[in-house]
Length: 143
Image (cartoon, rainbow, N blue to C red):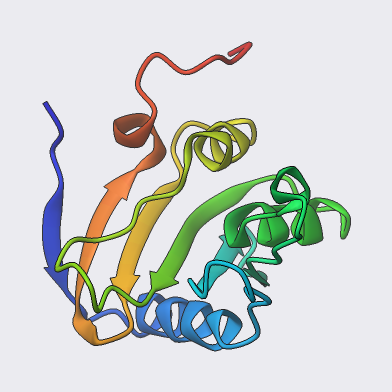
């Protein structure tokens, strides 16, 4: 059973991480789905990397926001992450949008203790807080 809980922001670092994910979302290239996603990743040493989804007409070539942020971090020499915020626009549904399966596996690749903040751009006061262990139980890892 998942232990999701809702969190009202008080921590300015988390607030900034969510704002960064919203800003990244605005850069999304999604002419096919029209579904913008932004992610902001903070490393254990406090550096932030952002990413947005980039679609391709050959859908297999599409890359998600979460993986974009992680690839940017890793290609900058960072491999230890504290948290990731993911922002989407959920006008059609009241639920939060969670990372897809490949993104969950990508996140856990770099540690099983990463906190995940899920935000809806139309309601930034309430964010779902979980962690990658909850989102991907029994994950495929070598640790």
